[in-house]
Image (cartoon, rainbow, N blue to C red; front, side, top):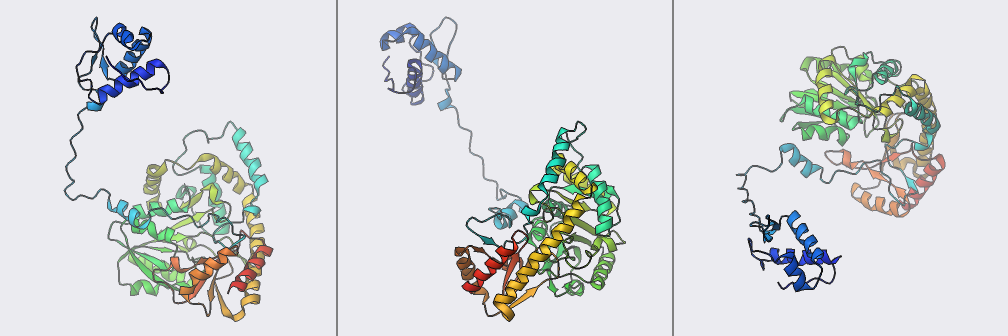
Length: 484
C-alpha cells in the first residue's frame, strides 16, 4: 500500500495514522475496504510492525477502522468524515429567533452599556458621577470583620443561602432603616439583592404585563426605566421641575398606570427633592389608582444640611411603595449588595423571583455587612463621608463660581454625590467638542442629555465629586475654564 507519510507530525506511528486518516477522509480508500495487515504494511513502509499496530489502534479508537476477530482491519462503513449530515431544518415559518424581550435587548442593549462608574485611562480629573470615594472606605475595619467571618466555623458563607438574604443582615437593616429613613417594617419584608439593578428587574417582571403603562420621571435614570421597557411596559414620561415630579402630571397623562418609578429624596439627574406635600399627593394618587410606586432611594443618606429626609416609604400607610436602597454609592459598588423593602403581598412572589434569578446573593459579604452595621461602623462611616463630601461639594461650587460666575446655573439640593450644571452661552450641539477637548486635557466630563427622552434645549453637564480630592476638583475646573 502506497502512503505518503508527512515529514512532521510527531512519532512515526502518528505520521502513519495521519496518512491513513487522510486517505480515508479523502476517499482514496473506500468504506469497507480491507487494509493491509500490520505485518504487510510495515514491510511496505519499511518500519516496525509495532508502529503500524499503534496507528491502527488509534484509527479504530476514532471510528475510522473496524477490527474483527482474526480478520484484517477494514475501513468503517461510515467513517466520521462521511457520516450522514443532518437534514437542514425547515424555516421557522416566520417565527422570530428571539422573544420580544430578547429582541428588545438586541435593539436597545447590544452591546450592554458600559457602566457609568468605570474609569477612563488618561483622565487626571475625572468628574464621573456615581462613584463613591474609594479612598474613604474603611478598609482596615472591613478587613478585620472579613477575616473574622472567614475564620468562623459558624459562618454560613460556604453553603447555600436563603433567597431572601442573611437574616441577621435583614434585622440590622430593619433597625437602621427605622433610625435613618423613618421606615417601620419587619425584617421579613426586607429582601437582599445583588445590586439595585436586580431589584428593578425583578420589580418589572412581577408588576407589569406587556402593554401596561408605567410612569417615569423626565429626566430619569435609564437603569430604572429599561427593565420595565424590556418587560413590555409603555413608558409615560412625567416632567420633573424644581420640586421633583408633580403628581398632577399623572392625571394629565390620562393613562391607567400600573406603576410609577420615582427618586423623591434626590432625583436623578437633577438632584432636586420632592417636598412633603407632593409626596402625600403621590401616595394619595397611588391609593386611589391602585398603582405601585417603585422608590429609588439610591443616595439619600448623603445629605449635608440637617438630617436625611424620611423616605417616601415611611409615609406609606396603604402598602403602595416598594423601597429600593443600595450600598453601591455609600460603600463600594463591588460589594453588589442592595435591599428591597416590600409591601407584604409582594414578599413571597419577590423571593420566588429572586430564587429563579440567582438562587441567593453571596453570603460572606452579607455576613460582614451585617457585622459592619450592627457594630455601628456603618453610621459612623456615613457621618465621616458626609463631612468629607460636603467639603468637596463646597469646593466644586466655589470653583465653578470663581471661574464661571453667572455663566453657569447649578441645580440640585444639598445632598448626593454630583451636581447638575447648566452652561449659559454654550449650545447643546457644542458639548461633544467641549468634552473631547477636555478629555485631551485630562478632564472627564459627562453630558446630561442621555437621561432625557427629549434632549434639553440647553447644555448641561454632570459633575461627580465624591471620588476626587479638593485639590483635584479645583484643578479640573480650572482646566475646564481654560477650554471654554
